[in-house]
Length: 540
Ligand code: AMP
Ligand code: DBH
Image (cartoon, rainbow, N blue to C red):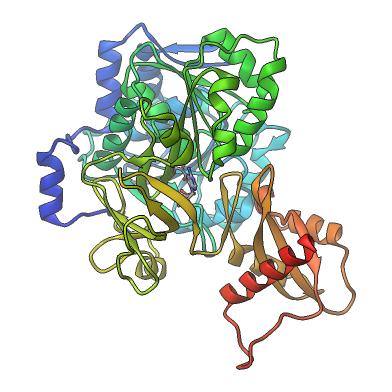
């Protein structure tokens, strides 16, 4: 197995420890301490389930034994694909306790993505829910196992069917392993992926715990906070900014919402007196549309966080008048760096910027395309390094060579400006991906799929502005032989076994892609010119 590593230069690691960012705490120690301090306090609410801190700890320790009794060994990687249910927490803390390494997948992922994660992480285990939103994950697991036989152990929350049910893990009569070294990789997070398939992001106990502990402080979390997970719990935003982990760190209560829709979420806000929630911009728009007419009392809400994609100032300005709570913009990435507007910032900062970094030791560079710093206030490429930003992806030399500078800065691919106060304003990005309502889609990955269709000669996938999604995906396709219908092509994409959000929203057939005098264009220029011409025509 390729070892999991994430290392910072020794002088910096020493500095991060000395400054108290890295405190040598692990996930298991964290839960144990919280359970000791907040034993009877509610840790998690999901549907009719309500577990105290003591109960969450007891469940996690019991399941940790079960996973080991099943045959998983400390160090094994386990793909976790669960909806927003209480077991999300008991399972991941069980994995931490057993020194197993979660690999976080979203419920929307299908065989293409899960097989890729399982292969790249060399996973031996896979935890799913039997079904969710009308989709049978056991059928998916069978497909994945077919492609990746090394994925030996499938564990199911609910009816196990051909697999083991979480409730029926074998009894364990050994001893749970010693606690992890806090500088070890604790789990693998998934990147949105700007080129090709998602990359795996190894995060250590030290760096990740710092990021959500500091986030919980910035967001003013106390044991009285009630934080709702409305986005998929596996996403880095509701997991750590400050997310459910920051919530547990604060000894507060996590409410799992099975759906981010206003109908479902508003009822839960009322029932549980939710004080804080994180949304992507399209959902924030939906909530603002639904709030004036709702029969539910959502006045407990104090902070609405919005992030994952750019929240336009016009919409941002309406949050307080309509929802009666403070907006917090969050600009983050699973690779590390997270920026927040602070709760007591002036309205113009909250509305007009995407916040400033968590840490005084987050180093931020804004460079032009030649790698020179831009003038103060000008737009440029954002590069960063710091106490919770990775130095390398797992098992991906090509991506590492592209994404990191020799002195360890991560090239975010985002184009930003910095205000005199050090706040970042996102302008767009340098890399070709579509940010569809916070879901990042790689143009290359989708082009690759389209090219597999017998009637597709060539394809270029671009983002188009969309009032609701922020960006939608559009595939420009040159057909060969019989011209397929757009709807047929989309339906065919669905059969490819990839997440539904990656199916192009729009398909436009063209006769040819223009070429320059030299007869060649880079894919990047091609996408840019197709996009430009399409938008010009749409305007005319
Ligand atoms: P991911 O790779 O999936 O972790 O996505 C991180 C990327 O999402 C960032 O590099 C940005 O491109 C985008 N993003 C996240 N939050 C915001 C925000 N508040 N405004 C604009 N873009 C954002
Ligand atoms: O989009 C993201 O990846 C994101 C957004 C807000 C993120 O990872 C985060 C906060 O931590």
